[in-house]
Structure formats: structure tokens, C-alpha cells
Image 1 (cartoon, rainbow, N blue to C red):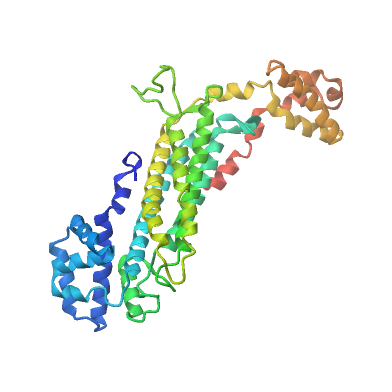
Image 2 (cartoon, rainbow, N blue to C red):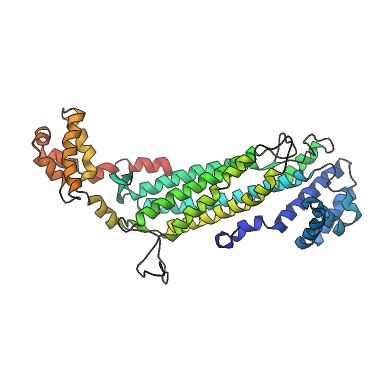
Length: 437
């Protein structure tokens, strides 16, 4: 975790003390149920909760000192709790294995992280929606291969992002449900030394589902799907960030990141206003996606369990969620403050002498009786003259002066094909599909 790219609420989920607090709750709830089942005395569970009520702080340094000797984090924690609680603590962890604690804790942490990320996406969706309706009919050029294609609106561009992040949100909700499982099933998942009712009780108390079948660990395909979902959301962040970066290029300059008073873009060139936030988002997206392959490789463990997954998850759990949390918040701010230049959009639309209307003329010629190949040839030969003039010539005027074109279409019919509003007749329909009627 790099503090520069971290926010406190998400970071807090992964702090050692937060992890130990979840460990304690798992052990105490399990002891509660074991007492109900008559496996341990009721006084054991009461002793744990009584101590917790009066001594809620966790001495991380003390636990670390014990682990330096035991070389085992869960045993170090249990030893420390025993030192605090006294003899009744010997009834903790009855029939359980370390992974029961570790895996269930990771499920709680990832579920809590998912809740924050879902809230982040909701904030981003609200920002995108506001700007999309603001520019619902703001004309701009659509580009394919980086080349002018046909007119669209800036609002539609944002509607595309809204739909994509809506899908990402749905995937994250599903991934949260899939990861939020509890396993308290013992050494190889057979419940040989612990009743399944204990697992059910702990799951209920922690807001988790029961893992239907575990080995010694929760199956890692769940984790793989969770981190893959984070990776897809990161790619959606990058997609919108790259669009903004392209739109801010000097030759385009249709939109740009907000440049605050006192901000400086370059140590050498005072005129520079660089898309530093969206460039940063591209980099952060790479970091989040970097967690996906290790998570996939964690799926294949030896037999009932090995610990090859453990070190990986200590990195990718905090790093991926903290980074994505920061990136979503940053993108939300970028969208909210994005400076949009409709006049420049119109100027760029007009820059290539009407070439953006070529398809409408092509279709009109076919409807007038020409073959598609002949229609394409007639429009293209005039369009290439405009292209090679760098937009100084007018496609409309060249077409009207072309005897083969004018033999098929009147001047008015040709002019009708250069109506910009024609391209926006379905914008309402698209918005209704994306945002609801």
C-alpha cells in the first residue's frame, strides 16, 4: 500500500489491528456455539466477551513479538489472548484449524472492501449521469481508428461509460456475494472435531454464507473471480481515462482535466496543462490488473491445501482494493470537474469539409438506383479531394458539381444529407435504455 494512492476508510480494513479484531470475533463466536453444544463450558465464552468489553485494544506489537518465536501468526494471536483472558482461553479454537480463522477473515475483509467499492461506483455513476445529461445533445465527432468517422454527442460518450460501470457494479455485487463465505470445518474440511453448527453460527454473526464444501481452505476460484472483477473495473476506468487523455491533446482539445489555480504542468514549460490525473489512472489500472493473474494461479493448490496462496493474498488483497478505491474516487472527481469545449467540438466536426456525412450520400445514391460499388466510387473520389486538401475543399460543393452525382440526386437532396441533427434522432432512445425512461 502506497499512502499517496490510499484513502483511510479502505486502508483501515487491512490494518493489523482490524484483522486481529475479526480473528477474535470468529474465535469468540465459535466458542459461544461450542458452549451451546456442551463442548466447552459457558464460562469460557463469557470470559472472552467480558475481557473484550473492557479491553478492546489489540497489542499488535506484542503479538508480533510472540510470532517472532512461534513463527505462526494464529498461534501467536491465541497465545496473546490467553495471556489476557486467563485459563478459560484454553477452550478457544476447539476443533478448528488456522485456515478457518484466516480464510473467514479474508472473506470479511474482501466483503467490506467490496461494500466501499460499490459505494465508489455509485458516486462515479452519479457524476457521469449528471455530465451525460448536461451534454446529451452536444455535437462531437465520433472516431474509429483515431480517424473522424460520423457525428455523435458528448453525452452519448458518457452514456457509454455509465452503462459500462453499471455492468461493473453488477459484477462486483455478484463477486461480493461469491467471496463472502465462512469456513469453520477443521483440518481437512470434514468437521471431524467441530460441529457444522459452529460454522453456521459464525457465518450468521459475521454476515457471511456457509461455504458448502471446503478442504482446509475456501476454494480459491471464488477469490480469482473477485480479483478478476476488480481487474475489469480497472480496465473500465482506464478506458474512460484514455478517452479524456485523447480529448485533451492539443490538436483535439475538446475536453480537459480541471486545471486549478496555482497548479503547474511542467517544471520547464510554463504553458503546459497535462492530463496528469487520467494518466495516473491508467497506471493505477495496471496495478489492479496485476492482481488478476496471481489470483488465478492461486486456484490450483496441492491436495487439501498448501500455503502458496497466502503470501500472494497478503499483497493483492490490500493493494488491489485500496488502489481501486482511490482510482474510482479520482475518476469521479475528474468527471465532475471536467472542462468541456463544445465550440472546439463543433470546429473539429467542421474541420474536414463535410466528410463526416459521406455515408448518407452513399446510401442516397444506392436508393436512387446506382449500384453500391458505383455509389461508393462517386462519393470516395470526391471525398479524397477534400481529404487531400486538409478540409479546405467542401464535400457538399464537390458532390453538387459532380455530373454523375447530380444526375442521380438534386442539389437539395444532396444538401439534405449534410444535416447534423439527423445523426441524433435516436439519442433519446439510447438514453432511455441506459438511464431509464
